[in-house]
Image (cartoon, rainbow, N blue to C red):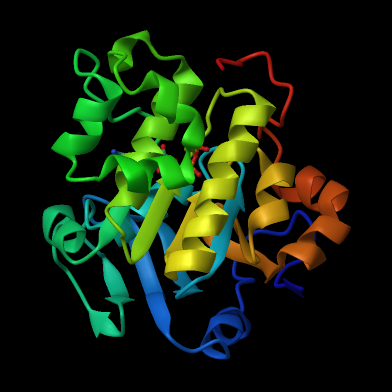
Length: 265
Ligand code: ATP
């Protein structure tokens, strides 16, 4: 585990070379964020960010509220222009907007369930160009629900449909920002298992922001911890899990864990 700062220490402690090495050793990098300043209207929220995700790898980005996780995801997705540094997808620097990155195989999923409520589950899949069998391979539990309007599915089922639409298109990169926000632990487990399967069976490079930290660590390969816009710790999931209580206390205060009262299954 690379702890690039004392617990509680914030400023000027990021050791970018350590962080970059972990991914470089794996080769075949799908996402590379290099010395990047990311933010809004030219004002950086994240500074000197270095982060990699390899093909077939699941990487989890952790941090407390306001740490810069969504800013990082939006920047990699092409929704926010870079302030400094570079972002490379599949070894090519890019400044393309989201719709072009999407055409090249990037799927961006957020907590907002991107399904059309008045259409049935099957129509939602068809509209996304996803064959029903491909969706059911990830989520067989959607089978009996195919004829039901998405608006009548539970929150968890809607999010399964959202993820089935994203994964069924065989993306090369999946960005999932709080995919399972407010959902019950069992549903979270099913969503995360599908992400792991996509990485293993299709080589999808997956970057997750996840509030269900302990569940995410069970399926992720590696973790970066962000604090006030800087990476202050990185390591394998096993390394971070071993020290999870310290990590939670130091860096993840304000993070809602499983059992939150904001549950919607
Ligand atoms: P959370 O877990 O609460 O979603 P986060 O780690 O995803 O937090 P971000 O949403 O990336 O954090 O926010 C990081 C910082 O950027 C915060 O200080 C936030 O106020 C600021 N920020 C977010 N969106 C904007 C915006 N559109 N314009 C200016 N600043 C913003």
